[in-house]
Amino acid sequence: MGEPTTIFKRPASLRDAFTHYCPGCTHGVIHRLIAETLDELGLRERTIGIAPVGCSVLAYNYFYCDFQEAAHGRAPALATGLKRVLPDRIVFTYQGDGDLASIGTAEIVHAANRGEKFTTIFVNNAIYGMTGGQMAPTTMPNQVTTTCPRGRDVNLAGWPLPVADMLAQLRTPAYVERVAVHTPRHIIQAKRAIRQAFQYQAEQRCYSFVEVLSTCPTNWGKTPAEACKWLDEVMVPYFKLGRKKSPDRPPVE
Amino acid sequence: MAKKLMKGNEAIGEAAIVAGAQAYFCYPITPQTEVAEYLAKRMPEVGGVFVQAESELAASQMIFGAAAAGARVFTTSSSPGISLMSEAMSYIAAAELPAVFINIIRCGPGLGGILPSQGDYLQATKGGGHGDYRFLVLAPSTIQETVDLVIEAFRLADKYRNPVLLIGDGLIGQMMEPVDFAGRTAPPRLDTSDWATTGCAGREPHIVKTLFLDPNVLEQRNRRMRDKYEQMKREEVRFEAYLCDDAPELVVVAYGTTARVVRTAVDRLREEGAKVGMFRPISVFPFPDEPLRQQALLPSVRAVLVVEMSMGQMLEDVERALQGRRPLHFFGRGGGNVPSPEELIRECRRLLGNGQGGR
Image (cartoon, chains in turn orange, purple):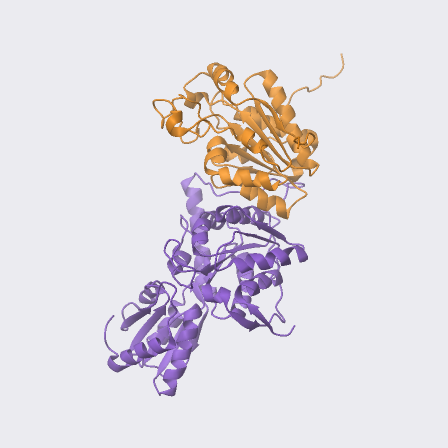
């Protein structure tokens, strides 16, 4: 027997801190996947994250790298200003669905369409978490929230906004993928996608966008296990997983 | 460099380049769009960043991102655009980031019109965005003064780590005058190394944020910002007193383009022998309270007249400064109309005739 070796530890890109996230929330998993990526690609010391408004507004308390905190929905604008003046740094926005898919729709579409060379991690849990469970643009049909107490009525509120699929329609070269984190298999796939997104940025190739289907047991009114099952049975059939667009596979003319 | 005939908006662009601006983020809106057109050509020539954003909301938040990275940055807009930028203005002030905003004011409210106005004075000097913050606000009245104050605005933004707003009515943007850039240089750069987000190699991470949930921590920041504004009041007051040193009976208070018309009216009235002077605030926040008092409360002064291209906004600051100690009168034009020297001369004659009347 040789000396014991460490096979699992906290990534250097995460602080040694307890998070404020609710039990069963998958923000912690997603934070870890990003942090592992920054470690593995050796990017931490030249990375600046942009925190959104929403549950992950305090992300800078958990990541161990430079951070800016944006107004609601404006993270892609901050990232644009930052990346344009420091083009050799790694910049990522971390945004929820209220932030990115509602109040920040213009900012995300135009940053992507300009091909800004930063990365967006879009955490879609189909609800406003921080404000206590209101309807989001990504809330599922008939899903009950505090502002659609009889369930989302698609005749009045429309269908959930499929952001990854929308951005993939843009001509500007980009990497767009949708993943989920409700099973170990999905987490491994999510890690691969996040790492790919940062890799493309490190190569100065393109804007990269990863939508991560995430759970919100507290505001969904479910146990963590039930939440994972609901994500799989209700969200995944609508928000189709997979690589939507890649700079390595240009669209067919 | 010899004097050059330049349009105000282009001179603003060139002045920012002279001042060492590294990035400019914008959105087109009349009557300031020529700044964007000028810098679309010029910024790439000097290795600077030019981005036409998707909205004023985004342009002004790009300012946040770039300023928080330690870059010298600015934007320009006009009234409805400034309303949208007010969101970012609050955040930029809260994060104590240096940045320069320029508002080439058009008439309002709403879409209003595209002609000159001074109707954004209260928005500029009393807030605009939410929360307990102030911009340092400068109001030039010639293109040359605009150039010099744009350069100065970058210095002051760094000095206070606070946004500086330069306001000019539409005429300042649109008219042409000879300007001189000789001897003008970039103010020294603020050392941003202890707070800018540039990547944490060799140091602890920097965080630029505006959320402070602990009331005592936030109050401490509120107090520190208040202290900055008090320092501005002590150190940054600027004004011009024109023909005020020979016991004037009437003092006319005006700023920006309006002050140019007042100057003409005062000159003509002086030819008639009327004892009229002009007081022109150049910094409107901080407002030159004490210098105005010294001028307007001279025993010779029988009345004070405020002239604005609004229905009476700076008037409130003049009222506050004079505290009812002299009869105060107001003459305002709106809708994009600029007061004429003739109508101001008539108004001054009327006041000099009865002198004592209240407002």
